[in-house]
Image 1 (cartoon, rainbow over the protein chains, first blue to last red):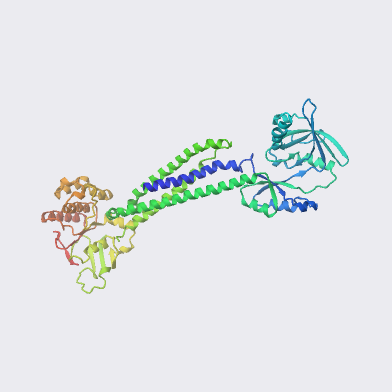
Image 2: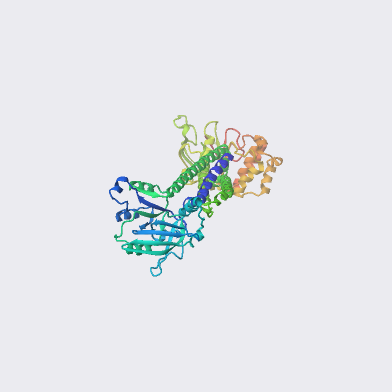
Length: 381
Length: 214
């Protein structure tokens, strides 16, 4: 009986703890419930050497995009638009009169996919200022690579908005210079983004080409751990930018490992259930004469089995409480380690309800078995 | 329950035997309420089997046993529990006492279920049967004769239509036999119950209305 109690306590604790840990850790890998951190993949066509030399552009056709939209793992698809005219950027850095000049490019995509919020994120042709969002990587690259090596001042995100930057746009026989403003840095988008309305206006103004197909797509997905994504990407010979899939892989393996752990916990619980059944049967067997005596006196099988069922219920309630207690203690131990990831603690409800269901199932199974065993003593063998 | 009928019954183990001199096996007999029966038997003629069949703990017989007109094979467990509490009071040959409990606890185990006798009546029985000092003794420590008296007191602690007694006085002397017979006769008369008693030789001293040879 003690063996059962310990085995079942271990089994149940493993199940509950695994579920709780999974609920707590999952947001680190995958924040699908959150509106702030969604999962995005940036998809491009693979560039094959010969194809590009022959002038085949690595772009997505309307059919490609429609097909992508129909995939079950896709929530939304956004198209990147590219500037199709010449851009020259100039940055003045302070009194020394030093200036940086560089060729430049712009991309744009629907606002839904942009992870920076700014009141300057708009474009008015009457009072033209070009707001730009750049990848946070660029700032790091400048601060820790370029500025350090060239003796240039390091700049913070807050300072960046004050840097005078101008863009000279040329094409279609025009060449005009506008002031620009870096309004934010994106973790998600590894490029230089301007508002879509500006992109439309400028491409119309400076480009002689018709609208072209996008070469990059951004996809909001349900769960980047979904293996169907990888299959689809491989089948269509696309590529995924960034390390999103790496965290998805980690998430995928987390799911697999937790599933294995839960399965082991359930197996232990089930085995302990049979250990309990065995000990109950032995106990009942040992007391067969006494139980039959009670039946002879007129006690019903229900009355005779009640003390045993009560005992089981008591043990199982104790195990349930023990497993929850151990889980909460363990959680209290590991939560500080997860604090670093800045996540909200998950609810303990799922784990507790699972434990409750598992224990109820075990208790009901035990009780039914006890009752039937007692009933089988009715006729003397 | 007014009658117990045994119709053409035989323990399965006896099937095929030729020498049937029994007045019970393979006959149609009916035990009526309010009448006292003695079933005298030699050892090994199926006396305890008969009691077990009637009390529903064994079913290895051919033919039918009926309570009134109801075949006992069709009774539910719930009905059996009611019968064991209200209709048939059974004294098994092996007494079926709980050895680790005291004499009184054994009796209360039954009386709690039926609520039939007061604690005063029960202690009086101990007095009458000459074992008042054993009331709180563990049953395992009593002699077999004392245990038999405890079991008989327990048999008295329920209402019934029939007393079914399997060798009730096998371990008792004449004096105790006399006392028990009186107790049982009075109790049966009070309830209008019948007595079915078996014996291999040491007969109970009740007024037997009908004797059957098994």
